[in-house]
Image (tube, rainbow, N blue to C red; front, side):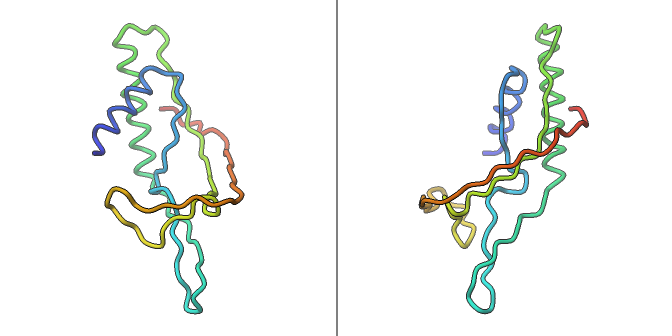
Amino acid sequence: QTMPTISKLQELLTEGGQCVWVAPSGGRDRPVVEEDGSKEFQISSFDTKSVEMFRLIAQKAGKEAKKAGGDNPPTTHFFPVAMLTRKLVPPPDTTDSTVGEKRSAKRGSVGLSFGPEDEQRA
């Protein structure tokens, strides 16, 4: 399941002109139930190995584009993005790896924040 996704990502980066969002920390943060029964969200830890994997995929995509005859292969830019959507589409309390995890959409605010570009080139 992962390899076809990585191949598609490399294909998109080789073409250039794409905007791709990935969640290297695994995506949605899960609530932790406190002793008093309240739920507190914990931010997923940042997985630097995943980011480096994306950097390697981008490097390979640049080489593939060059090999295909592109004099000016696309450059991949990396920007950190933080999203807050738990009020709109709250995550389930537990992680379920089966397909068809139940999700419900509600009304709620969302937050989106872009950080400065990671200047370390792919």
